[in-house]
Length: 114
Length: 111
Image (cartoon, chains in turn cyan, orange):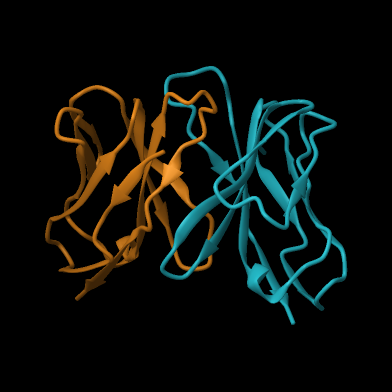
């Protein structure tokens, strides 16, 4: 089944404790991206990647890191999480071919930083 | 970058028709998407417009006017399961092919 997976789905952690949220897609998509979603603010892009070893900042990159060592994986790293990073996070992927390049989203990771 | 505006919330009656508007400003337009998102779930793709006009897909249609920076999503024969957020997203020519999302419109369908 074609899908984007994220792990963990839910995470409660404490300020300053490094964490990684994994994202994997099995559709051989070149493009991958990370979003955070907060009430009243909608989906905001954190980082995106156009291919292996090619990443760039989105609109809200502060406090986050990413890597793209393999085409299928695009982990999101919070080196020193803070309470303002409490949010719902979505990973997405999209192809380069086709007409619309629509994005396929993972199920989301709900992160709480205390 | 883009400036995308859509209403925060709308209500409608089961069986009716509802139109959700989206206006945008961008330096280089390269496509507009509509996504549906149920509470606590991932967004799912509904439609894509890159040329002016109406795209129809079952009960859902999407319209685009590039000169006016305007799109709408039309939902016909509303069902209770259509209660969700509807996200307008605009892609520009900055080269990333990753669109920017508006804040979404929460649609409540009541009996």
